[in-house]
Length: 447
Image (cartoon, one colour):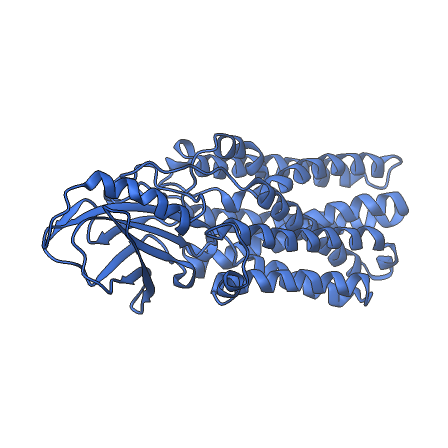
């Protein structure tokens, strides 16, 4: 996890501060096609996206030249999870715009519109009127969402939802740290009496409360009108992404209950591990090659928890018992080596899955973020190598534990900063789909 987050620190600034539009699912093609002229009224509007979308939370409307709007009944294609089909239950004629708003499988709202003309029947030639009418229809159909950069009509841009991203990053990071300390403390044998109970409880409490807050902010972020009505919340919880988010929140709260009220550390540890496992199915991995990306992210989170928790555990033990610190330093160092390897390999797999070509590492914000991950991993490995080979051999000498604690604190400082920004990663899009496979229908990114 430390490697993950360091890259965020370096690369978030160009990705978020620029406040450019963020795109996730890409509308690859449609039937009718954008800017096409067709002979008769279509029975359906068919939209094909670059990744799986959630039909229960998707909306499609057609807007005519006089401002008349028809909201379509949306269904998925049983043969293709990337397709949405809207049923047109009346005859249309003249110029129309299709206004769509979807939630991609990674849990982010995306919207856009395109025009087509039906030549049969009384022709309505005022194409500009249809283009203008879409503004009113869009305001009722969607809240400001990620829009196509090159859509036929002007679209508002949206920056990263800063509060939601901060809640996610800090909450997940605190949960990982608390679970990591519990792991080392409970596996420390007689030294488990050194477990910092108040610190672990505080970290898990912060993690649980912020993950709950993030879930609320996420619901508001994806709501078409930013209004959390009962029917909307019910529809979200009826979708896969909604259920996964709910399970994560429930597990986080149960972890807090186990550590703060039941005071059963082993149960808290297993509930916390389950929370991290479920977190692996949230965000980009849920939408892009999930059978590979989700396990990779789970490994990333679990071993990141081990790494961060081990550092905090070592600093705490150094304050309490110098002899115990010498023993734990060797154990933490050996475990951290395994964690680094797991984090590197899982991160490399995600990079391969989420990037189109190696050149994305330099020309795209998400790619530069991945490149920063590699640099961050190198820096943290440098810390680990110094601790393992520079300080551990002389750990039994006077003052050695103080030097080790100082070095570990510096490592914690780097990891803490990047974990704070780590929540933004899920809201930053992966590189755009190559223009050779994206027609003029949209200008979106893949997510």
